Image (cartoon, rainbow, N blue to C red; front, top):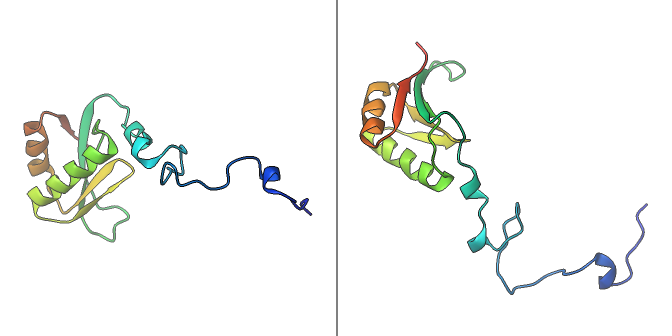
Length: 123
């Protein structure tokens, strides 16, 4: 059984403060100074890979894009633009953009136009 604490000093420091507002749960810095999201740039060989997948998706076709060297916030904006360009839905999961449907050629053209080094991956 844990020892019961008798005073606030036993808690070991600051309990609550509103001086700097909300804090990031990961790094503990104030939210406006947090750089956790900026550190999520995917390391790789600089090649963006596009592939068509159906496995594990109930027979539905999904185009996945991996290896884009951008921070999370810019990656989210790019995913939105690509979904809008294809006219379909999609998502961003762990740095991988998933676009519903088979849009490999269209996405390759769009990413090359945006200045990325793109390769078609898989069959």
